Length: 292
Image (tube, rainbow, N blue to C red; front, side, top):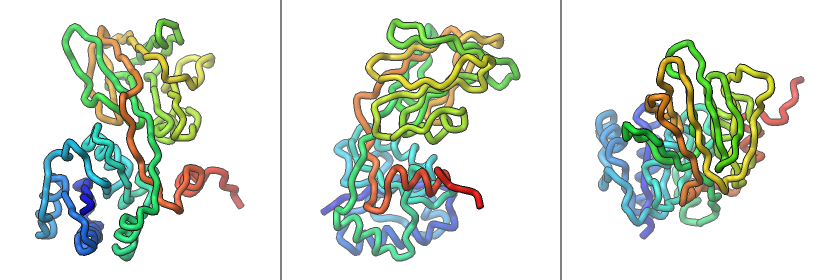
């Protein structure tokens, strides 16, 4: 019996009945369903429905498939939840943009059940970032791995920071501004895009290094190989800065260095037959659209 894990955010009241119908349909098609405990409690609180099996943590051996109901933020949270289990993740969009959560909720839940049973889908292996902090205070990042990006940012004051980046032992540049962003190809369409970085095919094995609100005209985004670690040190007038890993941030003293390397595992993102990288780029971000 195929085990399907369910993950979702707790701010989607309008979609709950459709999600419940999908779960019940999957069960009626002979699939064993486990639901992340916080999402299960949320469904029970707002609808009275309580799934048969709930779990606080993803089983160490993983599952046949993880369904993430929500938007891209939910998808990133689901990635952290299943961590290193290798479980394929299918994002079902109940939010707004839905770039990672690329499948729209079907009006007939049997469509989803048939898709899973048919096995007519494939996975794309997406490289991730591993991040650590070199600090005498023993501070750790809020998350150790990122599917999208690691951002070194100024704190909540108006002053800028200066980031110095090394690739291996080689000096890259000194970046004065609001911060520095290191993105995976998957994250190239997220914060990196807003910072003026390039869109990169998500299965490539590279990083994109993009300055954030740079205070010099001589610095531009840079695409580098992942075969060497990157080290970022910070100078700040306030004595602190923010480290954000896929949007989850922690304050650090400017004596702390950030080390970024390639994660020892990948995330398996499920793609349906009608989805493609270029198609999603065109549909969601209007790539190549012409005004009339």
